[in-house]
Length: 246
Image (cartoon, rainbow, N blue to C red; front, side, top):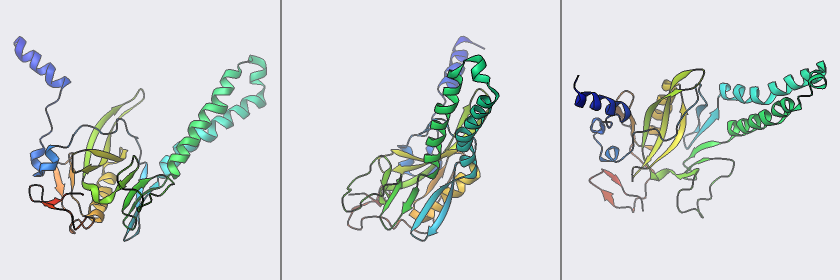
């Protein structure tokens, strides 16, 4: 192998070739990034999508996510109580150990419990997707916020994968992202259960009437119903075959 070939091989390993978006046959896919939007991802299914009504979808926290949060919340308290009962701290005097388990780990656990029960909703009645306990006020809010997305601004869905390596394990995590008209994205979920992510994408695709692009299987899913969450007064963009948001 010549020096030039060796350098090219190393370069490709460091900087992979760009993802071929032509398979989706959509100009929007060409301007959309195909690298992970949210680095990392859980090794278990974090959320389950539920259809509450024809106008509302909810992401509920999974059993795995609840158990993970409870481990951080309850188990440290059990260990500390056990150590206090055995007189371990009186003999060793190592109260730093007790502080870490009694305060830091439960704080992390309560945060995970908060995230577990935090509502994640797609609501056609309000016209918004939102994360959090505070619902968006449609009459007052005119643009997207961090965790409040106007449904009519979502042009497509995207599934991409990421190889995650930790000290103890390695796995592939799959992102489901919203894609907007300018190619920007918003991460919805990110975990290792690909089939669940794909099923969620199909449900949301039909719910919103927008396609989803699957970079894993390199295919496009076209919903049976066209997008109905648009401003009918907005001009139609023939180059992108969709309405432009006003």
